[in-house]
Amino acid sequence: MKIKPNHFLVWDLLGYTYSNNFGNYNRAIAAYEQAIKLKPDYLLAIVEEDNTFYDLQR
View 1 (cartoon, rainbow, N blue to C red):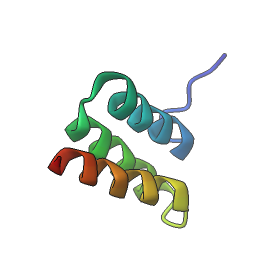
View 2 (view 1 turned 180 degrees about the horizontal axis):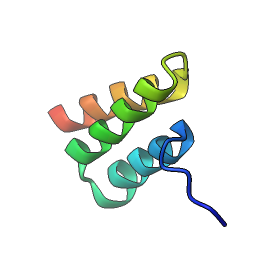
View 3 (view 1 turned 60 degrees about the vertical axis):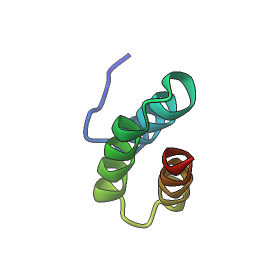
View 4 (view 1 turned 90 degrees about the horizontal axis):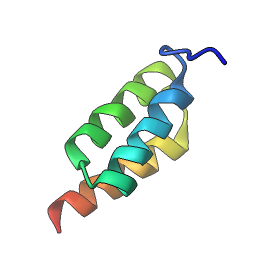
């Protein structure tokens, strides 16, 4: 299996993993920002980033 580091889904899943499995919200936000940079209309990454900002403030 090839990993495509410039594919938005790779960054989205990395953000999800950082946030939900490791509680590393800052890295999750950075990963979501990269996903959004690669595909600005990818709504799920935008929502997940917002949720992570919320979790970070708790």
